[in-house]
Length: 191
Length: 187
Image (cartoon, one colour):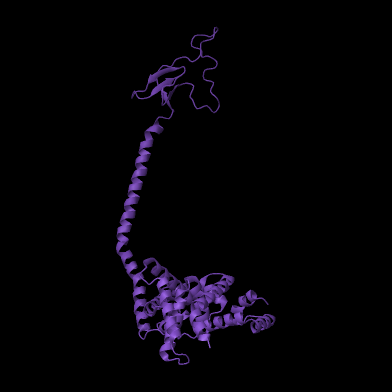
């Protein structure tokens, strides 16, 4: 066994973890190598001194002091809990205030959007004379309706006997007759 | 510990009595400072009490309390290094050398109480000069006598690393005590 290998086994030898073969090899080497023998003696002596250090005992009042400190340490969470209960009404009030502000914001937002929805196209019926939609055919008799007039689709939304007006949000009109609604805010197209 | 966890009034003092010696010794040997060690050992038990419901019943109680003690000791060592109000390692080395020279000069074969105390003091100081991570493993193994597996659990490192650290710590300790050991070995 070489010296490096022998010295790497010192720890395991001290812990009594060597196999019998390793122990025999180490002991054989130490018997023939004075340097490794000295090294092992120093190694084992230093660990003997360490293991032989006297036990340091706790102070006489150790238990009493631990108990006092433990009581202080356990009262701390109680203090936190009391503080929490004292602030609980404030927290609830703050939560209510936040809720009210949020509700007001939502309501005001809805009111702000309401005029926009009124600008969507809506259909209204108007009374009074209406303009003929189709030019009369050459053979039409006076007072006779154009054949297409009044032929609404079966599921039509419009009453063919009434004028229909579309109230638009903008005045982009391509055809038809444009006029202002009675309030003068929205263009009305009559067909 | 189960009784402590359910707030049995008599259980905690009993637990402290049972472990106060081992915890105080461990912390004292790691810090080499008796006064501070007593205070820190008390803190270990306070932590045990505060966190008594967090104790995992599958593990050994000694492993748990040594883990707390080792962590507090590590924190204390690092705090001292940061604050630099403790004597430096170099100063400690010098003190150790002086002490070893005094011991070497004493009359051979007459190991008085004073000499023995000086020897123990020198060994304690030598341990204190071993770097923290090696020192903890060394103290747990060679002073407290914990098995490698438990040391691995206490320090939260693999078993192989524990063995490596302990081997290195033993080598460092031997090197630091070499002057004393060499003189003692002379005929």
